[in-house]
Image 1 (cartoon, each protein chain N blue to C red):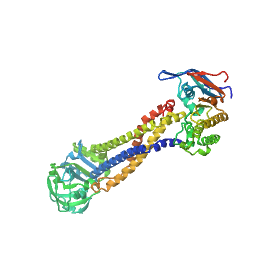
Image 2: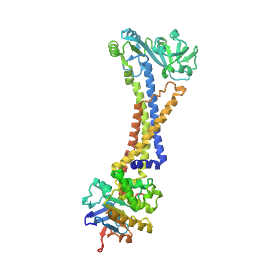
Image 3: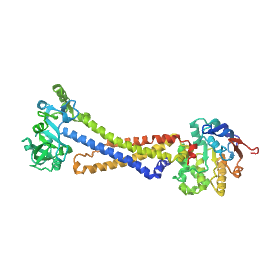
Image 4: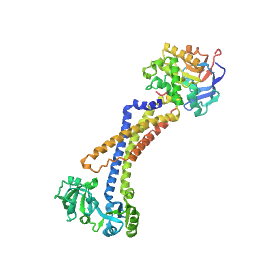
Length: 370
Length: 226
């Protein structure tokens, strides 16, 4: 109890300084939680697009980005004909721009595609999809920011298109995207006769291994991966996740420097007190424990405050119309635990030098310190 | 008082600034169990340095310090000494201002890992002897100079040390308080059977001890009569 009080005494003595340190860790933790959660949500949503009513993704081997993948129509035809396959949907991804929006995701799909089939059609009907080359269906949010409704003409990239439907999905990327008939998209993006991926639904999920082997045997240039396998190995996802952790880590490092500064000041302003503790039998490790305890308290309190701020911020983002569907506030337990551990490590690392300094304080000299 | 030597310094030398300031020049000193010894002498003669060396707060350049016939030569034995065998009282009370009297007194028991109930019982015993029971929950800032020094005395005795080293314990107190605190120091030393070695400028106080040791220029000059 006294030991705990000795830890807390100094924090209470310098309240403003302690609060600044706690705030430093809190904001770093909040930033890390927000960035990691948003990016994981984005990755999840992108995976969701690919795994819509399918278990396997077939794409060009060794491409860094699915936008550069090219899967020939012959592959679609062949895979669709295999007995273990229930359906195989080719999807062509493209990026276009409009006058106000530099990036709009385009999906070139067939009318049988699960994304079209399973969506809620707010306006128009699926039966009209794919009838004309210049027809498009807009996601709900895309319709909103393009100010389009059923029957409108919209300018997308270098082409003008006729809106024949508006649909709602649970996926932010799809909701903010434009759905074109596959052949129309192939022409528009100059990828005639090919798609970016084939999403495959099997009659029996356990045949995934067989399908992967069949693809490998028949199409040397293509690779088939199960959805989860793809999410784990896709380099873009890896880069996004690594970036999120790196940015968050930098924030935490800055917070850690704040803790280090506080702890250094904490030791320097209580040199005489440390000497008194030494005279009264405190060992090096008891003194270090006191310093580490102080920094651990700052870090954990900062982490808890930061997690609360981050969670509130994420919930607030969810209700921003422009971000609707993009922010997935699914805060994973392992992320929370990892962030707390990182904050703790940062705080303790920040206290390393001050603790060593405190351990080296000689009582005789320090007692003369005014 | 027995004839057992509990504290011994043999040919102890100490200097600072790489030998530029010589403080102790071959000091030989010993104190017997239960004895009260006053170290007198002018400022800078080495009284405090000798106390620090005897209490394991510092190491001599040369010579030998023994406590209860065990040579102080390792950091661990110094820690053991500070936790269990020696208590310190300084001119300035050296209490931690944000803690209460009770908490300040319990610090040595935390360091030594003493059982809480035993520590509380000891605290009650000492605060009763020093008349501080009613001040237990008070912060240091609320205490008078005399009370602070009495608190420091309690703290020094918490772990039942057999040796009490006091460096000008009454130096910052007024005459009346000084006399009262010194008397308490002697009484407690007698009650607890503690060997007291005290550095002081005050000749009148020093003469009330069992033995008076004079220090000059880093050496001991013990009067014949003491």
